[in-house]
Length: 186
Image (cartoon, rainbow, N blue to C red; front, side, top):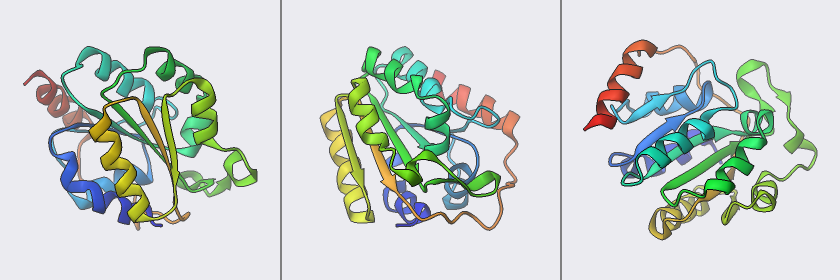
């Protein structure tokens, strides 16, 4: 499965939710589909997308928060999974795109390429609902189910190690920060 295909498949569902993405390929691919004011692209903070999403989910329990993360970032901050599990916000969906590499910085293999299982790690940390998916159809089904049940969920989506043609976008990161802040205040 390609990450861009997975994002495209669920893109229409993102309009009414708060979306936080980690840096790199995920942010670039989501922007390539179409930027929205409810999207926040967390740049220069590898490993902290789930922490940012957790803070928003706790501060705004009335809003569904979706975090798009990657294996390298989750592995950099495994304690983020235990913190998610400790607070268990029912309005947080944590999607981890696992391509088994640090694609955005040269493609070096991550621990998932040698057998580390992020869904099992999240479950062992106490995340109540986890899943690993390998096809777009499985991804959409797991995504829709997680939104419907409203319980803290981590979905690990196994994707190919391919990225966007470019990582640079026309979106000003400073303007994204202010635009997102205005969105949250509405």
